Image (cartoon, rainbow, N blue to C red):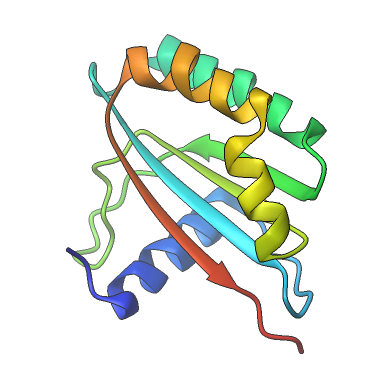
Length: 130
């Protein structure tokens, strides 16, 4: 199990690698998901997960969604072993609880992720305000 410090570093590195900044709203929640495919590096499966994940934007309480493929790195601090990363921004912890049981999320997990994915690692954190 990763220490919270390393987990935070992975999340930050993924954010930087994917080329975006996180919105900062006190009390907001970031749901960071790293995905390892059963067929590592399968471009079609990566594209499918990224594309089909866009439906998560329709779930009430979701304020943003970012998704992309791993950016390879030779730096020892970077974990380049995953295939896809998703970051789902939510209004607050209550919105995340609703999101997790929402039919669109459940369907994505059951019909897209479970058939394609070997491992999923999730990190959730609450945003501090500026």
